Amino acid sequence: MERTFIAIKPDGVQRKLIGEIIRRFEAKGFTLVGLKMMSVPRELAEKHYEVHQEKPFFPGLVKFITSGPLVAMVWEGDGVVSSARKIIGATNPLTAEPGTIRGDFGVSVGRNLIHGSDAIETAAKEISLWFTPEELVSWDSAMAGWLYE
Ligand SMILES: Nc1ncnc2c1ncn2[C@@H]1O[C@H](COP(=O)(O)OP(=O)(O)OP(=O)(O)O)[C@@H](O)[C@H]1O
Image 1 (tube, rainbow, N blue to C red):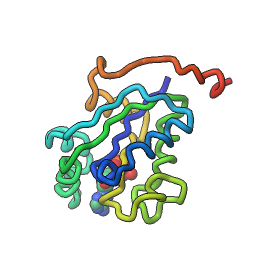
Image 2: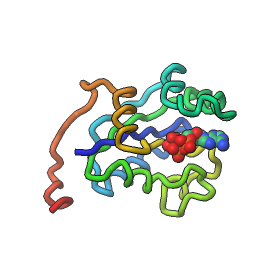
Image 3: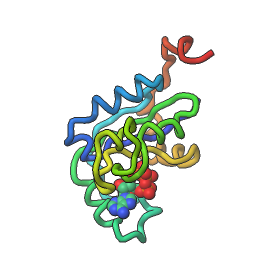
């Protein structure tokens, strides 16, 4: 079953949106298989965003991600990688569609509340970067028969 890495960034935690964000993924029908609240070490933030290391916003992004607690999660379900990106919305919350997390709760690109892996291969890399295998819990949702044919 497909898995994706989702992180509620420090602004989402401070804004008390943890419950609302988890609710949206649960209500859609995805299954939570990994969850931890953590302070992010600088090296982990830099590794996670290494594709952006030459960008002017990189130092500020690393400072922001390491500035407070973050909630790291792994969600499972058919098509969860691309569906999660739709639930999250466009990178800039001002242009993100209403009904998406960023569209409903954010106003600036540097405080866009949540991260979601952008492809299946990226998801696998990010899951192994943020979680050990022992931290992930495989379980069968009792609702599966009502979610899938
Ligand atoms: N111009 C910018 N100014 C400040 N921060 C930015 C800017 N562009 C991107 N970022 C930050 O870098 C993150 C990664 O940018 P990317 O283009 O990969 O967007 P994304 O894939 O929608 O976001 P994420 O990887 O966090 O899910 C953004 O989520 C945002 O927090």
